[in-house]
Length: 251
Length: 108
Image (cartoon, rainbow over all chains, first blue to last red; front, side):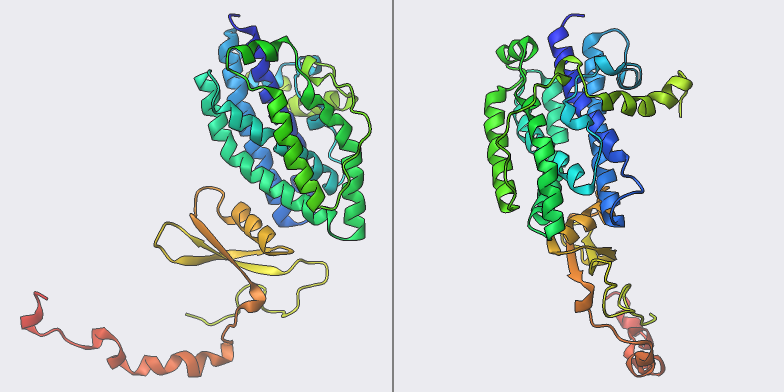
């Protein structure tokens, strides 16, 4: 492989979206109301579409003949590079929306920065994904405001979701030699700048939602180097079973 | 055209466990009229707009969306059909087809 750093970085981008997209797809047919069921399934499809683009490019960069499907369905848990935030089980609607909001608020500034990447194929994918992701952020932040500033019960559930999810956002700060190498080449943005956009966005919406940002410690997270919660393995077992039971099947 | 209530207007009050109903109008391209596409449930205007987008405009069907509370629509009722719509039927001179175009006007 000529560019392991870029390959690793593309896996992170692809896996975040594949895993979160799959989690959202679990709501299909179970949404709180028909319209929101459709909305969440749309978000899931968008995210899986973005994952397909990132993972296809990853396979191209790897040059070992793996396409997006091979990377999605034939890697095991420890080879996934997604944030743990994305793999946590759905919980209730408030939990799902809070997870979505915290991710979208990160994804929008990240994709914006990636549209200026020195790797033109990556910049093109980011530009395509950015439009849909802006809509995702609008959808999730409007819901966070309504849940947080809604009824007593919706406020309680939204605050509980935030309290549980917030420490996992520590994973956004993770950086290693992969990131540093790509930043030096102008391919990946500096996470410190993204984090300040993310903090601004989340504070603004959470304040509007009358929710309190927890000030407890962040979790040490390991998703970026393949150390996941116990939830990812179960999720992948379900996600990968059909592809693995019928290798090479086309439909 | 059969006059009938728009969807959801059959009962004037939404069921207590349902969000209010909104009528969705989508515009296919600039300058085209906004046409009725269907309806969605939503707690408020912004969510109605988003639900309308997700339900009726996700595949590039629209460049603009209107949402209107269904309760704001005033519809004619089936009993109105006679007085409202029938009188036109026996007055063919109200239609342009009633008038023969004179031979000299063919080029117009």
